Image (cartoon, rainbow, N blue to C red):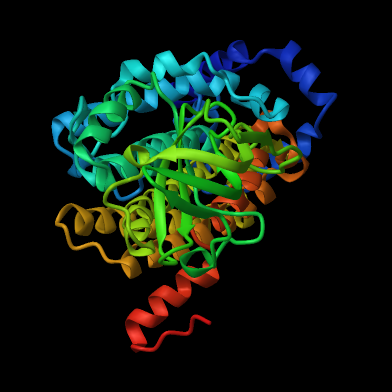
Length: 452
């Protein structure tokens, strides 16, 4: 009798707890008898799983952080370097990210960022003296990656200023030239450019420069053209490489922006690195004093020293471009819903994301080791060339997959990935094409030169 009373009491409390109004509304949407029949067939494990799912239905699923450094290479940095990395990251997120699409679309340079860059005090990061920070090549690479993670154009502007232009003066200039130019360039009060490539001469600059230099007394007369010269439209000084007509050797000159016979035309209609102000330079009987010739640049081998140093930075920039595309794509797939759930929950999308992360992680570990070799003073042309080949090639794959997982939205500028896709094409080509860098590595490993 007591057992029957107990069951009746439980049934009574159960009936009291049922919201019949809710059941009536629910019956309009589903077949309740069919649902109840299905529930009755479930075993305890299935019912417990269902109750767990229902009890957590109101809670927001906690997702892992979006982090492109999957192997946590950042943890290998010392406290000071890690703080600088995060400082540059915060700067790019706050100052550059909000404006970058606007300026990229207009193909204009945001000059207002130059004083803000100055406050970071990272220009000429690897150089000793002249106000430079004297940090490691590893730190220089990480800075390039953090910049390109937000925008490759800004990273390129900085690489031309801090790497190619300042590097040419630092490595090949006289002490007087270093004292005149480097402190102002380090503070971004003076902007530099690097004029090597020509309209008809790209990969063949080692022996085929058509820009000429003729010495007459203490003056050099330069004639010719340079193309694709970043920062050229507003630079205060441009390092010009020209062939000495007397000894047929490549020499470097510091061309001041107000030199008579110098003119520059902005290159328009680019599909990549649109913020970078590339110029077509024309030199017509430009007279440059012997004092403005780079005193330690006497052949293309000297030019190559600068290129070797900065080519590693381009590999890091490729990593940053890939990382930015991957992190943007990952964030998108976790919020974009199709068929009732985020597309990140689908196997094919996860497959693309893992392929992207695999490439990115391989690239990161490669350039990290490359910078360690550079910091040890053992960097060779083939080391930098291999990293440039591999990283720029893999970046193309990463940005392509990033665009793919975003579907049609992947071609819209507002989602950022389209910009990374376009910019990856420029990074793939400059500082030596895949073919030329491959031949540099091929020569090193076979002992035979395949260059024409």
